[in-house]
Amino acid sequence: MHDPSLPPDDGSGALFGLDALVDAREEGPSFRDSPAARRMLPVREIHAEPAAAASPRGRQILARFPGARLIEVGSHWRIPGLHGNEGKVERWVRVKGETLVLGERKTLTTRPNGRSADWIAPGASNGCAMACAYCYVPRRKGYANPVTVFTNIDRIIAHIGRHIARQGPKPEPNQCDPEAWVYDIGENGDCSVDALISDNTADLVHAFRRWPAAKASFATKFVNPDLLALDPRGRTRVRFSVMPPEDSRLLDLRTSPVAERIAAAADFLDAGYEVHFNLSPVVVRPGWREAWAELLTHLDDVLPARVKEQAAAEVIMLTHNRELHEVNLGWHPRGEEVLWRPDLQQAKRSENGALNVRYRNQVKAEAVGALRDLITARAPWLRVRYAF
Ligand code: SF4
Image (tube, rainbow, N blue to C red; front, side, top):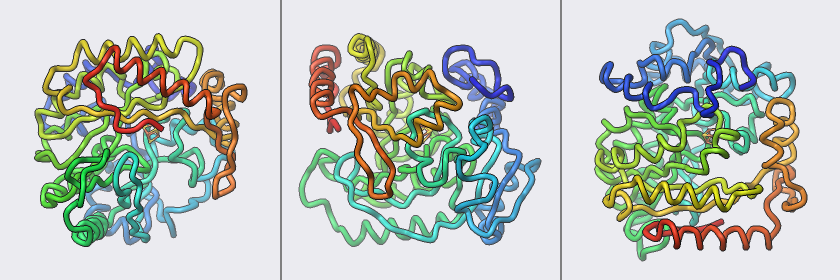
């Protein structure tokens, strides 16, 4: 990659491989104390709102990273010298691993969704230690966007509990779930990586065990074996994001390799999770159909029947935006050769003024149709919940 502080890129696109995970599992009970986890998050600086640092969750996090310098900040938003894009391009990836922010979530709002989940819950974090080139999560804080952990997890969980209670039972099945209200708990980050930092993900998984009318759901690109010990009792859906490995090696930086995410599916199912897949993002580039056909064949070859029986998928076509494109040109121009395709894409100004691009209607319709056909041919057991 482009940051000399990181271990040399072995071409896998990942910071560490399955061997490291297996070693870590054998070493002790907690993956997050393993060298592999420390390589993902070699935290050196923690920017913290005073109340967040003083809270029980904040103290737990500070104790986990005793060598980190604590910097007091007035607000987790707009930290001078950390957020924004200026001068950060070279340091972007390093900042993601070496910096944490602790804050309190002030706005507790659950929004209707209807596609991936019925509801988007207020997340317990914002930002990510991984560095996917197409990631939309940094859109508000700028692209040097390390994990902000919200320490008032009790308030977040109490809010979700009240929201669920107000809904009552789900009146009828929909594609999100036949019975439960599905709450996405990881809209602006990756809950598996958050679990390396604190017990926020564990607390959410445990909370959903108490709510039979609801189910938590989050997408992830990171295999964190610690999640296997959380005993979710079927009330949390993990969506492993997958894409052809050659796309992932180019675009999904610092994530677990795709084959490792797929290989983890049965373990997660056996540990009590529902396991779905996000086929996302689908990047239209020369050879994309063949690459997806191979990936779907791989899923069919390696997944055991019990995973296939309960699996479903979301298909999400790539969206991108001009600002991110320009930032990426400064550090990862090769990725932009496949992500930025004005010949195939159309622009749309979003509510916040950003210029987003997505595939033109016809390109998208044809691609979605082609992918559905490939699924039917190669992995017919994989129900497509929605394609967008
Ligand atoms: S794993 Fe998800 S949240 Fe993290 S950088 Fe990649 S797309 Fe963004």
